[in-house]
Image (cartoon, rainbow, N blue to C red):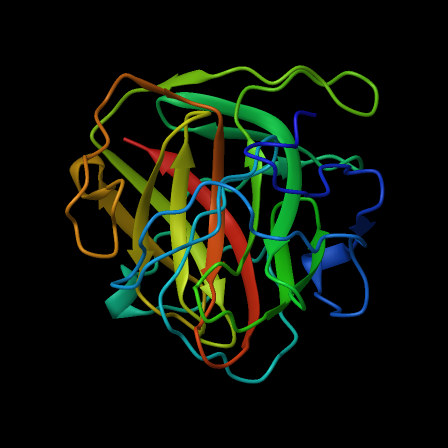
Length: 269
């Protein structure tokens, strides 16, 4: 996998991930060596200046804005008809991924099929992440350390057009066509989550409504923005090629953020 983008360290190896039935998150397990210092490209996020840069191969990382996590909890992803949150978009779940023992995702997402390995990363000294996956979802839990310049974050995601070859395969871009994208997720601690698309150079993000139960949010392409914290950036347009999708936990400037979230599905319409 390609991992080093803009000088950020990350762990893109899926080999060390723990296969967990029903994707129960255990904070002490998962991928070691995730901590990375945020020395990459910076941009303002969530009304503050300075964020983490972008990571390659398994997800996009660019986050910011004060948030305060709650207490960690155990989750059980992968259930079809999980809960409802009217604020977050309703009960209809997006298409669930099929995940192999090696962490390779195959997702028939409406107008497109996404394939690639799962990975995770963090930025900010003291940040940590434990990544787990089952056969139809993946989850991440841990802590995003406080950072006075808002250069701390944690993310988990997957490549969308990656060959399955041995430990890792070549990752390529994939044209994303449609008008809306639906994301199913849960954030057990209530921590802020951003949904992000990445094209290898730029990212488009959307601030998801907090949801401690499994929910689905349908997002118009035009609402995905390169500056989602205030909507001042450029919107995503149909026909744009992307390389990764991810969920990102932004860090706070004053307090650490506990997180426990799961990716449950995605559909493009």
